[in-house]
Every structure is written in C-alpha cells, then in structure tokens.
Image 1 (spheres, rainbow, N blue to C red):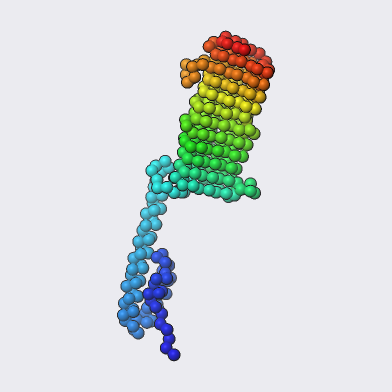
Image 2 (image 1 turned 120 degrees about the vertical axis):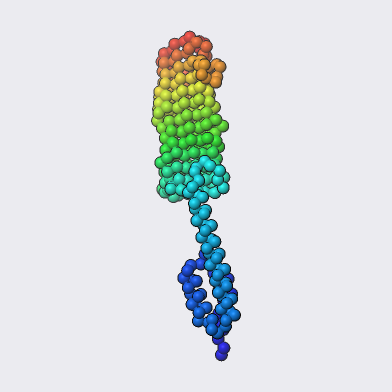
Length: 302
C-alpha cells in the first residue's frame, strides 16, 4: 500500500507567523529526509521556510519597536489610544480600563479615558498609588489608597478610599463618599459626602464646595460653600457665599476680600450651630433657628 506523503504546503500554512525555532528545525528535518525523493517539493518547502523566517523576523522588529515607543514616551504626551504601563506607571489614553477585585499597585496614574478600580464583592481588592494620580477623563476608585490627586478635567470619584492632597481644577468634578482626604483645594465642583472627612484644611478658591461630611481643619471659602448636615471643626473664613443647613461649625469669620471673585460676602445659618461669629464691614450674616456662642458685627447681621 502506497504511503501518503506529507504536504509541505499544509505544514507551512498551519504554522503561525511567530512559530518557534523548534518548529523550524523539525520542518527542516522532514525536508532533509525527503528532498532526495522529490526535489521540486524540497525546493518549494525551502522557499516556504525562507518566507516564514522573513515574516518572523519582521514580527520581532515590529514588537521591539512598539516596546521602545512605550517606554520612551512620557506621561501627558500625545499618545495613541490605549493602556500603557511603564515601570509600574499606568497611562490610559482615550479608552476604558477596569480592574475588579484585584490587589494592584502603581507608582502613578495618568488618565484621559475611563478608569474603574473596584474592590469587588469580596472587598478584598485594593489599588495603591504611591505617586501622583492625574485625571482628565473619568476616574472611579472603590477601595483604594492614593497619594495626591490632580483632577484637571472630567470626573474623579472616591468611594471607601483615602487620598493625600486633592486638587480639583476649574471645570472638573470631584466627589468623595466614605473616604478620607488629607487636604483639598477646589476651583471646580467638589463634594465631600456623608461619612467622608478632610483631615486638614480645605480651600475653596472658585467654583462650588458641597459638604455633608467633616472638615477637621479649617475652611477657607472664596466662592460658594454649601454645608448640609456637615461640620467644620476649625475656623471657617468666608469671603464668598456660605450656606450652612443642619450643620455644626466652629468659629466663623465673614468678610469681604479684594482677592475674592465674589463682590459680596454672605453667610447664612439655618438650623445650625456655630462658635464665635465675626461679621466684618460690608459683609452680611444671618441665622435662623440656629445657636451661636458669641457674635461681633461690623456689617449687616440678622
């Protein structure tokens, strides 16, 4: 019975372009055994091997070039959309990146796309960022420990997480729920939600600050601060608009400042309490169903 010969075309076509050298040696061995039987097929196989080797060589060069581009580019530059990691620095450009239920650590994060870090149902997952996190897209951290955060644009949200110094720039939105922040500076829209706290100071330079959590340090408000069911344990200095409802504040200084974007300084308490209240010339202060320790007025006080 005549034996069925191996088809070199079939063997070659079945190999991927990045086949290992072991496959090449095996195929070459088969070629050597049979080249005397059929020279034309031997030549055909040799040509096929040459093409295959060329394609593998080309693939390797392309891969190396891509890695070089990844490691040579710095964060914040113009990048092709994708997810990049370089020396434990994570960069996400224009795409979505999700990590759920994983324990993961980065030196820094730069995001123009969408990032979700979720501790998962078991709450065992955790993301740790030891350096700066910069966001210009959408960032959601559920169960994380971060150093400083620079929210330049877009939306950044912390849930059951902690962070160092948080800067929220004009036009950006930042919120924290069940989280702890070291310090906060706001020029956009910032919400320090229920069961969240700021360990040190908060500076509301522009935009709007919404507080239903706790500021353990001082609050400097030069724009609009809405405190609902929250508390400020340090002195609150307001040169803008301050609204406190069902809240507890320590001392309050309400004054008009040349450095404030607000031309009128107004502070209003509703069903709230405060320590010593000082209302300076040109400023307006009012309290309804509220309790104040002491009051000093040089402006308009009700």
